[in-house]
View 1: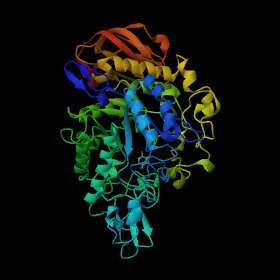
View 2: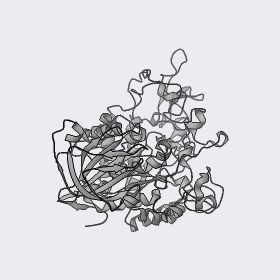
View 3: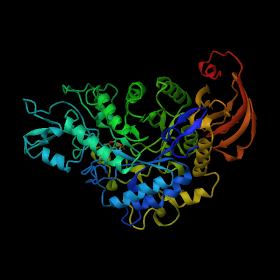
View 4: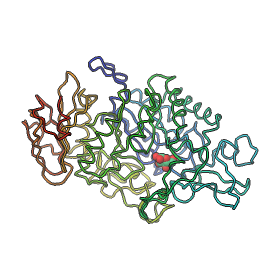
Length: 559
Ligand code: GLC
């Protein structure tokens, strides 16, 4: 079996991004090597061994390009460079070479929807109305009464239009005022961005996570967005409207297909798309016959109520929506969302780990979740995230989930010898990688076991998903690849004990991984008693469906 390309499983072949696990690194917060308090590329090089040992296949880096850092790198002023505080291009080349030498892959963030307002393209564009780059961005006249061109809002608060006094027009910014949107109806913009993709692919990067893809092209008529009837004061002001004209436009599919073609000029490169849409709209971004994104990120688990019925239904809905040509994926957290352990509690975050690493499809892990890092309260005077700064008092800052990685018990958790750019969780002395590596009850040890098992067992890595049972507490399913032992996963999504006594299947097997390791290696038959916060995997010796109970979840277990 060749390590980095394909996994053989009964004639079917799987690509590295199908049977491998993706790990997101937020570069500012992963490892600082030069003591300036900000993570860097050399720091990452030092920590590659950790990622290799963890068992992940691909590392996705949030942006590392030159940037004024108004949105921490998502405002790019040079798409072909490295931000000096992160390192040099030579450091990047070394990182890429090391990642490859260790049998892993490197995925970069690509931010095609907008640049920085300090990018030379925008400086030219705003210099005069007849500059050749004027049309590379979105410029509109004021309404005859002097009003904004339409009612669209910025994700980071306030209107999405900014007046430019010098040239007497507004420019559009879906995010920060320092992130003007590029005009993807201009073919020169598309060509420039596709060339940038080729430039990095020629260097050998293994793919891109495309930022904000559902924003990239807007309604040709610039119609007002309708009011959101479900808006509440506690939400971000952006939610006042439904972005039906400013996002998810039909023309986006052509662009996504042309981006994909660029990837396809190379060998086995990956395009992930950041898209926050309901499942039926999301799957459209695979494109008919898999012609667009390989993996439109599936964020379902980051926002669902943490209850077993909702989760069971969401998994079924997603599985049903995916055509055979498309490969599923699951995300439990990222740099824009509260951390899972803060959302559901530390006990349940272990159950979440069992869920994420046993579902069908590529899992994406967010750095630090494997040690149960939690959101860190950042005092108002230290808030740095523009989303938090622009909408104070609503608890919308993303700083809490971006704090420094907790490596060990030394000063600043081993993240930096200097002053960290964002405060580190004060629990770092007991919650860190070094301590957890020695503690078999730790989240990190659970992640190690889950990843090892998943990567060894074709059923867990690529096998079919068969729903078995769900009630108000429990969620159970089987993963099974033809010709390989099946696995039964049973999760208790509450803190109370739960009893798994399914009427529709009989099974015997052994618990092989459990969020409470004392239960591991215990033989089980037909039923299970679970503690609160327990999630476990049973390697099945035998199982069969036995009845015609009309509960659809149970019926679905019939082989
Ligand atoms: C994406 C990024 C987010 C960023 C935004 C604007 O949603 O994940 O961090 O602020 O795009 O680029």
